Image (cartoon, rainbow, N blue to C red; front, side):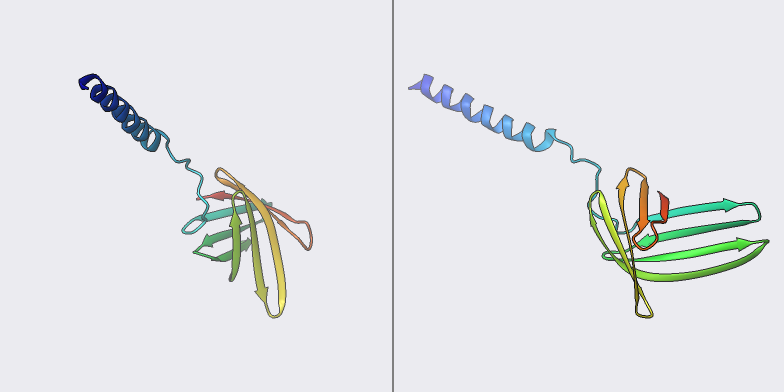
Amino acid sequence: MNTDFRQISRMYLMVLLGLVVFTTGCKKDDVSDSLNGTTWKETTTDPGDESSNILTFQQSTFTMTFTMTINSDTISASIDGTYIYNSPNVTLTISDSGEVNTLTGTVSGNQMILTDVDDSNVLIFTKQ
């Protein structure tokens, strides 16, 4: 009877040890299924001018701020939109004055590549 108790105790300890290793031994990947709270920047520089787009993401919305400097004159504008993110794919939708513009792309590490559905213009953003 004492031997049966020891075998059951050892088996119980092995099961507990296995559960502890299983639940604490696996580190969750750093891949996030949310863009909430992140900021991304895309910059284009040509002789005499520079432009940048900054994307700031909230829970299901984003703000895109566009800034352009031409010969030391700066123009800036912001527009809000909604997004859907299913890692690694992202779709941004901007509705302005009845027009809808959609950007689709992917996120890989600290890089987001977006393509404008209407004109196939490609934008490469870097996580800030």
